[in-house]
Image (cartoon, rainbow over all chains, first blue to last red; front, side):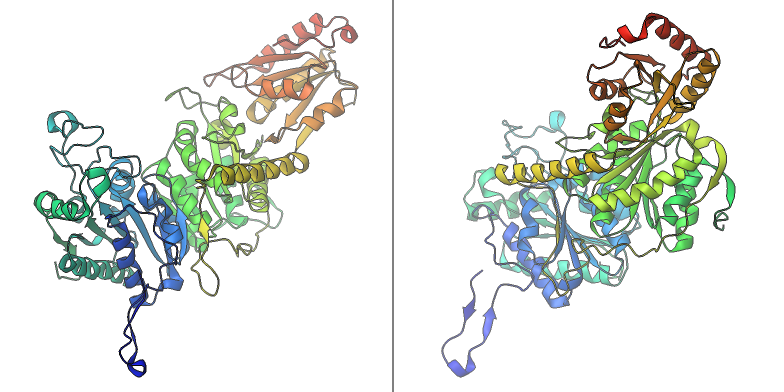
Length: 260
Length: 371
């Protein structure tokens, strides 16, 4: 995230793009072409825009984003695998005026942590969840995730996920939208600039919903994992568009403020 | 609901409710739990009382979630506790390991019931190994307190919060359904200031300071070893400073010492009195801290003890710590019932008589270990 400065006229020089204040200067460890860095930046920009950095407490999960606490310049707690919504609940109950968010992958949120996410949403816990869905376990080396598409090859479904043996991919946003405690839930994609812009607006809404005390909010982000998908970065982005979006439709599934 | 009378007056209370009230008076304001017999009166009490004092009671979706809420709340600087019984404590072990790793203060109550598996609901001490050896993954310890009366249940809650915060370590209070359900007179502890001590490490929002991170993650093995060595240093300091035990030796003439904690100690005390009436010089060592184990108490008894008889509601767990404390200097015998069965004082007396006869020449029996 280089700092770009317009230099044509010294007197008119202004910063048009810079690292968000909410991000530290530590270089991301993510693989080339991975969209975690982009998702981090969007969250950081929203924190900056809302002016909430000093009252934000993040919860990092187990997965590729386990080091999230090194990249955000706010207080953080690292949670056990799948337990981030429970940890966030404990934090929020002690500091009801803090802005508490979790950053979780699909193995963390949609497999081992299914109970925690469902019940945090059902309680209407006033937390915001950033859910990275890349259809695979990244950190452990490309195993089947609960979100792996039918037919998708992974190291534990080498011949492609067969529904009759390995079940079906799970759509968490749609499930959580049915719960009364959910105030806002949306699924967005990071595969092109247009969708990145929409994703940022959704993340901003999710944090606003928390600030207004309306209930649980979550943004699911369809993300790329070129290394474990075995695709070059550009093709990985196309794979999101052509393969993932048909199974995981984009949109706002719930907005208690009436927009969805 | 109002708080039971304080000001040093004795009130009649059920054990679990005395624990709840004592915890609140010790400044506990956050409780996360999940129902399980035989401890549900404690969360029920907290559900009624905590909102009255501006605290938070939350019934979690599972023991796993409850302990992770404790982790979050403790990391955020709250004075927090949870309670459960054996199968639920097994579920909490992952979270307890993280709490120990991240060095957060909290209190965990285990009203032990018979196992393994779903087991039963009756009094048991079969979770001793789990409680005193860390319980979850990794090199760590909890401070473990073992009260034996309603008064001690209440007092142990105050001690537990104090120790947890002094050492930034999870403290477990172990009892069982018998202690939890019984009513006895108790003098409740005085109210403590609610404001928790300053916790500069807590996640409170990074205003005017660098961000705080609560984590047990050290990917670099050298860093992780250093972290473990720091934990070990803390454990050593606790072992030095916090061993607690009560020795009951009515006339200072005891030669044969029962060793028991919690409910087993109450029964052992009755057996001790009966055995003394029958002419056997029996005393009682009652560990209050199960970890750190009160080894110094055993050293101090070596000049008069000819043997030790451990009584447990298990098939022999604490007896291993007794042997480690005695270090082969005296014989160690064991008597236990398990699965929720309680020994009658009479059966312990009969066992004491048989041991006493085995030791017919008490001075020559030293050095032999049985049990």
